[in-house]
Image 1 (cartoon, rainbow, N blue to C red):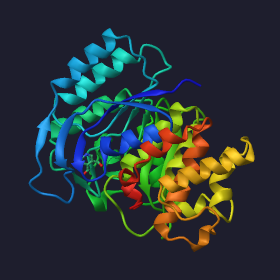
Image 2: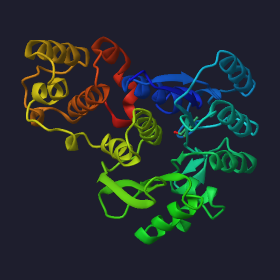
Image 3: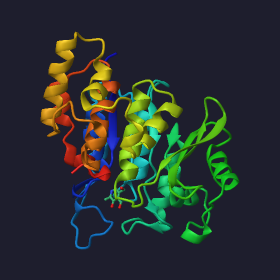
Length: 342
Ligand code: PXL
């Protein structure tokens, strides 16, 4: 399979772990080429910080699109997120129209606008309207509850949001534009201690819930890790169900282990290789990830170490053809900090 290529139209926040700072390493680690088109450069993300810088990169969008079109670049997916100005949503829509010449290019829109009933500080009502227009073009949208309410033109304040199964189903079905757009509603909680997604898949026409254990605290950027894993999995040919499952499972490493020791677990995906080569690669990867010896039982590791082992196992599995040096370089563990790997 040739390396899938994704155009990622998001901001870059220098400090903090979200948007491009997450999308680039996650997609790269999944064996997907990520071509970033930054909407803005901020010194930090907007949540939890004040005094951040904001460089609006609106002018770069059409110029970059024109150059990429001139080069005849094909993207397997266009993946959009946080936007920096009112003009950017329409420019991103132009980008999608230019590069989605046939149905082989999918458009995944994470309609980043807010969370927990609040709209992000830099977003204006015109930007929210623009995001709704942009999301109209998408094959898959990945809103949280706040964003879903905005897209539906409903009250997005926290108390107004739906918290039962029938309500979630109704949200995704109404957002599906008569079943023509897949919807992955994130941050769904039906039972205490669990968090997940409600998914409408336009291919099957069905709606399902996928959950995992809620680790008890939320981190900035987890939505970006989720949407990036989802995007990577989709361009690698996974179904929406598999892609969401992978995104959700990323949040709890303990659900990912198949074997009692680190060596067996990480080595499983390399089982086609001669035994010695498998061991050599596992040792190299683990050394790069700063993990203790491969023969340690997983249960004896700290949570952070278990997350690294889980990440190694998942990503090695996704690769099919494993290129360890690339892998260990791009896994830049600090970037995946949404899962507290450091
Ligand atoms: O994770 C969404 C996001 C992306 N980009 C910026 C943000 C946020 C959320 O706060 O501030 C700049």
